[in-house]
Image (cartoon, rainbow, N blue to C red; front, side, top):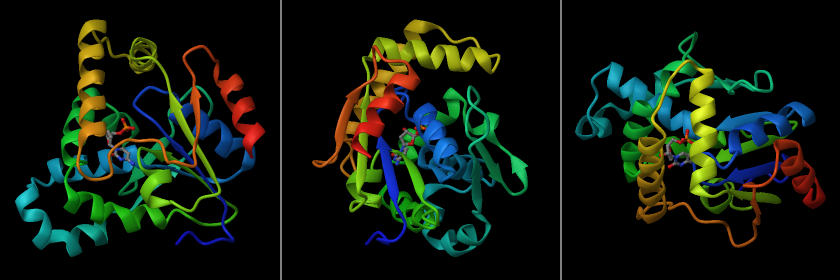
Length: 224
Ligand code: DC
């Protein structure tokens, strides 16, 4: 159960729908904590890759991994991604690559990984409040959160946004392959058996295709 004294706003939706930007804007405006659950999965994928831990070994090494898997987030500054800190290192640009996204999408479909990440996510729920960004924040992790937002946008618009984001990081990505990868990831996220990407029944769905970030925040505030 979500601690009723700690307010949580969940922001779910597919890749590129604007969750990161909107979660960052809300966290900065309200001075609340931020959980970028996608980045948490990405950091676990990075950790496993670096330490050559296979999925088969995960069960036996869980306790050891748990002790070392201490991730924190800094909302950073508008226009830049939320910063991911792991083992005293800023791993933001390492975990936010398309290669890591692909690896993470496969890993995130595994029940053992989702069960491991669950309590890690709930640990972020501290005062004065939490903005939780992900795929299953409103449906599974903070199912009794008072405010649930589901952001969506056309796949073309989301690919365009992702391309701009990657360009800012100095990475050139072909639009067609970006579109294909997004569609593939959407399919995996929506069709997986465990915690598939679906809007919570009590969520507010906002299509951000034709809205700027300020417009999205304005609309969300109507419901807060
Ligand atoms: O939002 P993102 O692109 O950083 O997420 C990376 C991957 O993690 C993506 O394939 C979906 C998965 N994910 C998930 O399964 N559940 C979440 N709550 C967040 C992300």
